[in-house]
Every structure is written in C-alpha cells, then in structure tokens.
Length: 336
Image (cartoon, rainbow, N blue to C red; front, side):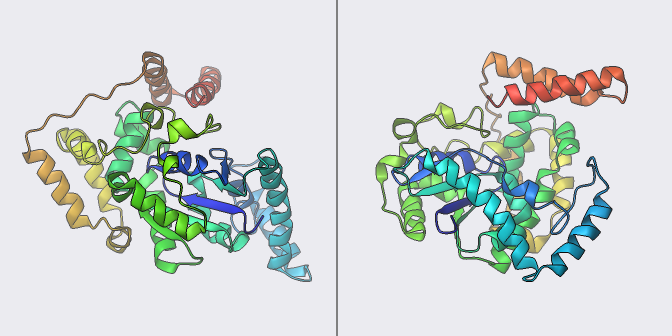
C-alpha cells in the first residue's frame, strides 16, 4: 500500500472534508472519511503513550522499548509489523472499489502524530492543508460548541495542539508534500486542484471540483453540516470569523489569550503571522459589520445546545456517568 495511499493532513475545520470530497470525486481515488487507523498505533508505547488506559502505560512503554531493541531489525521491524496491520485494512477497503488506484485517509488527528506517520509511510502522497488559525477556531467553536469558546477550549485546545504540529511538518519536511492554503484553494479551486493532481501524479479532472455531482455518499466522520450545503468550494467563510470574534468582547479576550500561547515562528511558517492576525481583528472591529447569523438544522441546534449543557455540568457521580453516556451518544448522532 506504500505507493497507493494519500494522506490529507490538516486541523479540524480547516477544509479537509471539502478537499477530501473533491479528491474522492476523482476517478482514481477512493476514500472513507477519518478512518483513524494511524493515531491508536502511534500511542502503543514505543512512539507515544496514553495517560488513561486499562493498563499501566509506564510499564507498557518500558516493555515495548525493550522488546523493539531486541528485534533483529530494531525499530524498522516494529514499523514493518504495524504497516502489515494498516496495509491489510487499507487494502481491504480499497478492494471494495476495484476501479480505484489510491486510497485517501483524511483524519485530522493524524496531524498530531506526523513524526510517526511519516516513518510508517514515507513514500505515500501527502497534502498539507492550512487555514487561518482563527478561522479554524471560530468554525470549531460555532459548529460544535454553540459559540461557547470557554467550553470548546476546555474540551480541546485545538490551536495549541495543531498549530505547532503542522508548523513542524512544514519546517522539517520529513517527506515530500504539497502545501495548500484553504483561502487560496477556495478562491481558485481549479488551479489548486491541478497542483494537487500534479503532485500525486494523477490526471487532472476538473469535474471533481463539483464534488456533489460527482462523488457518492461520503461515509464516516467529518464535517456534519458545512460541506453538504454547497456543490463546490465557496469563499463565503474566508473573513466571516473575524467579525464574529472582533465584535464580541468576551470572545475576543479569550481568543487573544489563545493567540498569545502560539509561537511566532509557527504562525510565520504557516503563513499567518501574528501581526496579520491582529490586523485582521482590528479591521473587523472597525468595519461596523455585524456578524452573519449561521443557519443550522433545528435538530442539530437543539442537540448541540443539550450537549453543551452536559459538558458544563458533568460531575463524577452516578448522574455524571449517565450524562457521559448520553454525551457520547449525541456526539455520534451529530456526526451521522
């Protein structure tokens, strides 16, 4: 599978589902949104570990380190064994579409284990998608947390996790990849998609850009609301985030505290320097423009409000355990 895999790397809400839908509409590319095959393997104890598990992660880490050191080929033998597992599953999925040559894995969490992924599949095709950090944050908070930045950050400090990880990939270049900026791509999807096709050495198919017309149902996790509202890339979301943040003093203060935690060199290499971020917010604040109201299906809105309430009030007791189960069920439902 080494030369038949494509990894689309990017943070949640950065446009990965949009680009994955377009690539999946290509005659040579199969995909299933967010299979999450790689991330668990990265935390088995050798490359990384988990803090909460039904076993002692410290013992596991020591044991697997010693085991790998005793293998004839060391780390490469371990990678070969892991690759046999993922090759088998990727291959089985790809066999269901015999007319397709490549399989696309669009799992945003892969961005957090890129040193492991690029060791496991150094010859795969890589696309690194970046988007304005505050656009990502705004989309994440509004899509999944009903605009509540505090609850969203307690659940997942998304920028503090993904900005350094993606910046490291761009800086160290462990494997060949093509960098794509979301804002440039939606402004000229034909030019962006042509570059991607050239990098992957596949034919350019302009019809794939109209993904709703070309692709079959996109199964698995991913954007539950935004991408399905359009037939092709649109530019309406490029600047919407700035007005939403800048016109709300509480949100602005929370966002600025998050930006303060990000490294200047990481923002620079991603193409969104701190000075630009602050200028964008100042421009939005002085524009007098009011934030546009986001439209959401009623069912989604009600479920999301209930879920936010649960996240605010879960405690460690019997009721809390029941609420956690309900919270998990709602998380799954909202991604159906």
